[in-house]
Length: 132
Image 1 (cartoon, rainbow, N blue to C red):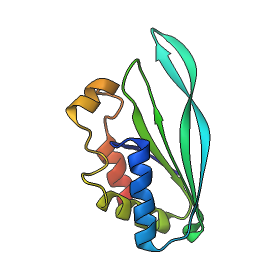
Image 2 (image 1 turned 60 degrees about the vertical axis):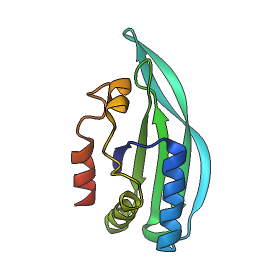
Image 3 (image 1 turned 45 degrees about the horizontal axis):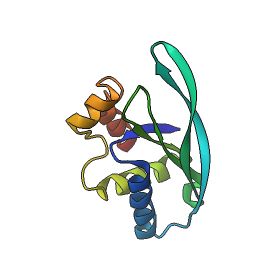
């Protein structure tokens, strides 16, 4: 399983993912779901729910999920979680990141300040490890 931060909103990332899957000519099914996460406000944890885009891809038995979490009081971080065969994961992640307008680990200064500098720290290392 790979869990990576993405510097684009979930809808934009989902659109880019569909474009990538069509270029690779891979079949897929998409479903929507809800994912829960914990948001901390003043040391009090709150249970929250996020809209989830789930893609089932028969090639490599992949399951990809995209959602956004709001870790603090403002700003959200989009997460991509991928399970399945390692070779298919690598191929999909490489094609996905190549199809985006900028690398998915390059959060703007505004994004980093809104969500907290430590929240997306190490995003490039995580992506490098997933693409290696």
